[in-house]
Length: 234
Length: 310
Image 1: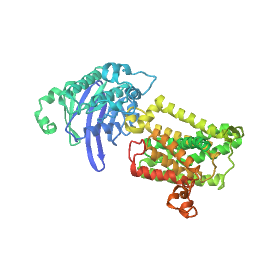
Image 2: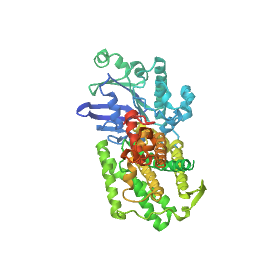
Image 3: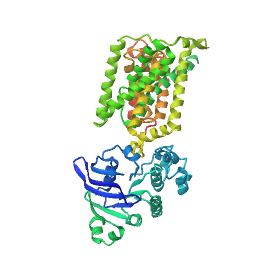
Image 4: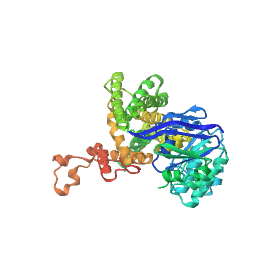
């Protein structure tokens, strides 16, 4: 397994507050990695800094190239997909138009076509030609993930995909993540629900106070009650 | 009936000209958050460019070439000026466009002089197209109507039916997300800014010879375009369209009404010779857009169709 994404000594600031303090993490090719931690410890900021939405200080290697400080569209074009936590669909555009905008190059078809996505999610198919603003929270979440998949990323970073969703929808999101992983796409999953994260991830990182405080396999992690108590339980 | 028909036609033509100006301004504002004070200066440049190019090539080539040149100038301003200022926030951008407006005004005075230039309606369109109620209607005004409608249809097609239009629509509200999907948002900004300026330039080309091409032309129409954008609702093209027609018709109809206050308020005994009694509705016409602006800001701050308050 070769390192596809390698973050080295990543620091980030919001004004004067130092929110990321030397984050180190690695995602291999085809690997699913979960980034766990309580709210406010810097998990979302880590993925935002990787995408350049928060100014990063440090090295971010993606497929052997340092992408630290590049513009977000340049990073996306290199094959790094990002699904932010706020389910940023384009509300005025239809579901289908949202999906079309996920495609980076109309001449080069990716792993998934729009019809695949609509087949996978009949709810989206029913509303394919209605404005995406009317979708439910769960449908919006599926749409944002599907839209990023249309760009055929080699690694996808997904921030809190199950937050605020009903258990039935959480299960659907879990299935979609497994489907992405089966297709060979690497995943960096920022998640609070251990059930989903531990089921699909092959490695977990735990963050605390802006740095990585634990890394290991899900099996190892399950034996570490001390880590869970100190860094995850509320 | 005669006055009504001609006022209606003139009002629609003036309204569409206002929309040509305000559509670019509102697109730029919604996407970049920049209220471009220099927008009407690009309208002026359109008229002057058409005058100079037209004197060499004739009107028809100038009709296409002048807006393209104005668009390129606008794209250049965005790429090498505004983009650098952008990092310092919206106030810096606002002041930048404010300075740019004066810079363009002064440049125009230096190059073309302080008095109006003889930018004339092309001979091929300088004839009465039809006679109605005994009055002749100039062909050039109908030409303005046709160009405006063609521009409207083109803009609608571009925004609603092309992938580039979808990217622009999405970037209007979610520029970061559009970037995360791999679209070069700064380039989209530059194109939209240039395109908006080109539309303003086109308005200058067809409006400059109909009205008058002089260094004060930007200053005289600029504030009205701002009124259109605010009344229509910041960031709404549909709103800008309705507000353009509304203001175009309001002003044109008001000008045609000679009724004085003394006639309206005759029952109060107001003398037609008094200062107040002498005021006619027509003389209030230039004030009406600004009255509308003040009322809208007080009663409905988000405008007719805007999604955000100012």
